[in-house]
Image 1 (cartoon, helix red, strand yellow):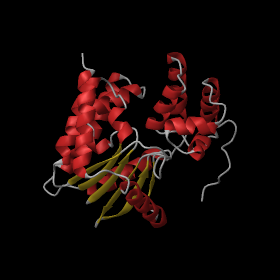
Image 2 (cartoon, rainbow, N blue to C red):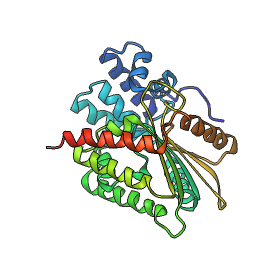
Image 3 (cartoon, rainbow, N blue to C red):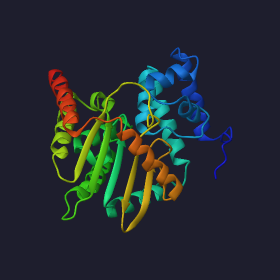
Image 4 (tube, helix red, strand yellow):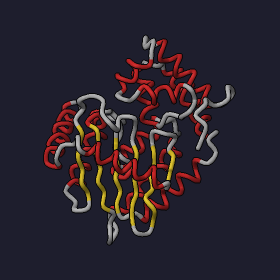
Length: 280
């Protein structure tokens, strides 16, 4: 088990956490509680980020910059710091490759999307806009989009994966790219929701509840052990049975808050109409 003590003072994750703490305080959030409430996550998650125990995943990181009203110059600086912190984790590429391998062989995927659409359900335009906001240049964003789109082949194979996706209402209204991109993305969700191998449900934004600490995914199947991808904790991949069982139980708890498939489609249609009204 990893130590729960903060990382060494010179660690890139600690330096990033310190800067994010300063950004929080400069924004008027003198304690972590109000910032956590505004973001819709636990104080514990904010604390882990600020003490360098976790590098914030992309969705949480971008949301923090938004609520802290970080300047463009500071945003670029913090984004660079986050990239250094991510690179310092060492084993991440190997762990992510393990997830990609098991994802491709999974029979069932459980996806929890908090601020963004799950990767498997993203349109190329939505994915590319996310990568660009993340700080990638045009070539990098194009290549990453190609990889992400290629992963979605599991939805269209002769024996397609069965996906149960639960998405928080915030993701429907979290602007990625342009209103046009959002309309196309949400229309894509509606189309997917009518497939026999896709169950799509939305959780209304009614306040904090289990699962608000971040997104995660679980892959299951005869050819793989249950595999967990924890997007809110440095994109960690785990096949440890105790962890995967706990995550499956949490997913079912989250799903208990979700609307039915038909109610979810109606909510997505409302979001489409709102984004349509914002198109130029």
